[in-house]
Image 1 (cartoon, rainbow, N blue to C red):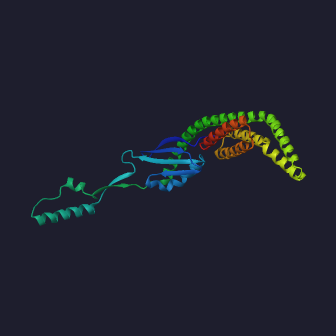
Image 2: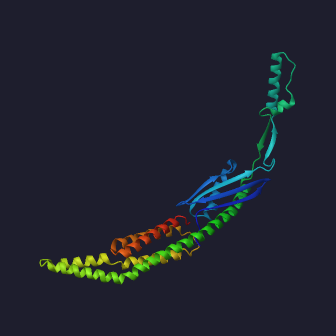
Image 3: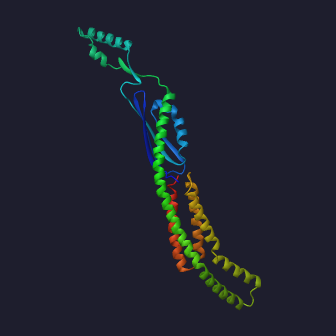
Length: 292
């Protein structure tokens, strides 16, 4: 069953006391386009993330957000810099001597000065981080594709309805063909009488004129091709794989055949039917833009 190209997925995992969350949102795009948002310390795992995505998604613009919520002091450690602290104390002593006071730098003030105490990120195992992120990503992708599959069923049903309406139009035109053939035959006889009235016309010219008139009026090939394209579209809608590009191509072929039909037929009833067919083909084409 075809899938749509829009959807959302989210999953979380625990990592060293922190919570890692992966959020995915997908919209229509002709090709696969991944926009990544990773913590700066994890930029090295981006290729693995993209590789996992390519196994699940073939088309669409995919926004990937990976966040990490600190769960306490995990991954960070408080450090004390005695060199910086000593410099502050010595500088404070020199200032006291310059001002002629006995005031000293208190411990609570010293502790708040920049660089005396600081937090240091502990070196992380990127292999473990990658495994956790990819695991959460796989779950988020399953949720995303579940939503895309559900929407794909709705789109596929709508496309089938468009094909059925288009088929009704083709059948209506086909039923009208025998009557149209009689009208064309009458035109040919009239044209033949006109040509015979011109005694100087060559037999070769007469044959060419008749052949051109007959060719311009015959829409049998267009009707046959339209039916074949519609059957192929229905077959594609039953496949459990990406078929959006093929459906879009078929929409172009359907449009071409309907346009040719419109150009050949000069019957009022058929022209009105063809206009309705054009509208259905356009709706079909628009919907294929949403299929993966």
